[in-house]
Image (cartoon, rainbow, N blue to C red; front, side, top):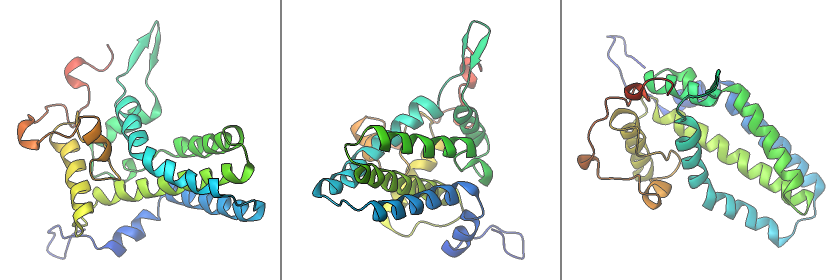
Length: 223
């Protein structure tokens, strides 16, 4: 945001939230979570094992987020014969690194959100012994997806960090974009998976990467 003199000023949380809800992915994730929650209440059959689902998702989500970031978002285009393998998420993420302040590139692409909703539903139907437990999973994973969208979006706004946890998340993700794209892959936690998987170095010990804004440029677009 800018003031009347044209100087950039900090964005308030309310301003950030209004912009956030102007984009489709938060509505799809939030709406999907609400529909799944209503279905969960309608199904009933509450059992103690339901509590294990959100605990397991909370424990796994930082590592799931890390793997998606490393192996899918930072996918290097590859040729298989005459075919170039370059998924939409990877292409959009490269654009996001080029223009990290472009709000439209911050959010998960619409096709990918729809795919995530379908995948969560399929997992709920096939991987759980009870319908209720599967619906608990859908509610939880979509809620975590919404949290991811909010955290990632907020970090890329001019909202200034106030809490200690958010300040660490904000710093780490900025380091990933502007210092070195090979480290600091987490978004929603203060370095949880990065610390375990050894991608959380002292920033002073890491050289500034020439390809942080143009992923894979040094090696060429397609090997």
